[in-house]
Length: 255
Length: 255
Image 1 (cartoon, chains in turn cyan, orange):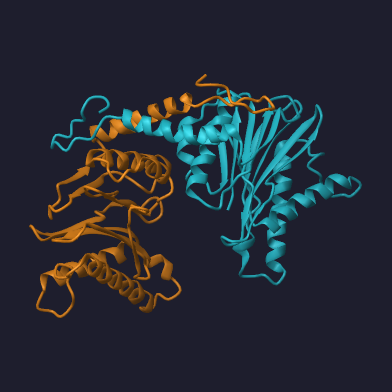
Image 2 (cartoon, rainbow over the protein chains, first blue to last red):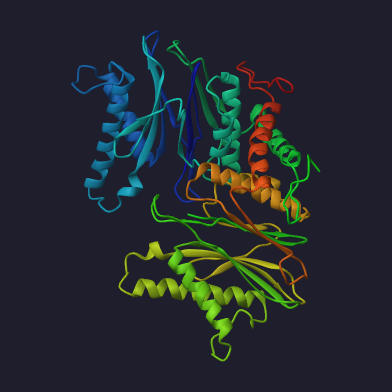
């Protein structure tokens, strides 16, 4: 499994992904699921991937090939005029790779080769944009009503995102929020694992403001992980106590 | 979908279930998913159900029939000598109902008729026990290493249960914890809905200490729901801020 989140803020985009891939529970590897291409001062594009590793690697490799051989006719995401066209290209490629595998004698095993992706980035003179690409190749775009996308093992880490997100938040707070969301997921699901990749794309910068790999030994992540447990316990105790009285009037304040 | 939790404490058992059933998103009904049988001073048994409604109703109705017709040879959970045998009976019946439906011209559609159950209760002179019954009819029992079971839409509400549970907690705190877990699930998934059914089985009481239906208008649930949002926000802000500095030493204390 996997856990990746892309988040749209007033200040730009914040992205985080885990690195665990597994086939069953005993064939565990570390693979990067965050891939970035940029042209200084002109564009920056980051793709997060979830799903079958051979499928997502094939898509990323093909995107790379196209960037390296511009004489070929095939479209390159480095030349696409808008982020919408970048998302369209990635979606078509993803669909073609999945269909190709299904056609190649693998019919009936389709779902095993499925994958989804988050595409984030900005091109000069346009807004930062964030897309979620489905295995069918179609996609949706984030708005301030639905300002973040998750792929992979999305449920455990969702409640805190729903409650903590604010479009005006600082990058530092957004990273903290993602750390808490990843920590909740990690605590509940073995198939999501450290290290994590973190990237912050500031609006109109066209080059990552901040990129880091968060290792298992990361002191900040440890501080968040243990601090969050304690903070949750305190939050829980600050809620009014339940009363067994029939009228169900809650008692006032903490116990 | 559904969300049900059964929790084993030193003091006894606490159970909670939602009541929403849906076929698609536009065929929504309210059905009770918590069923209790008791003999004063001798035994109390509660079953929580998740999955296909026709399947779970068939199981519950058959259990009822057996209780009403003791002259029949079929085993009754009111006569089973241990909770283990109660779980065995419920498991067999569940498996038989699912298999019967599959055989009756519905082959290939098996998964649609699946269901799982939580069986909780106590029989005189024995410990309170808690079981999770799988659609295959086999089951597992809770222990103090794994002291609660969830069925249905389990993921959103799991992180807070993992962190908040303590076997020595009071019934009041356990109910509060369940309210928070249900609130997180409700916020993320349309297919889980109010009202909720709540039941507290005190050790050696053989009759529910407390049974209540929590309606959408319940003032305590509202207090928990809004209070938890605010408490989470405060907990989040109490965590140390992330720093973009390369050494990644976290700043001290809250911002």
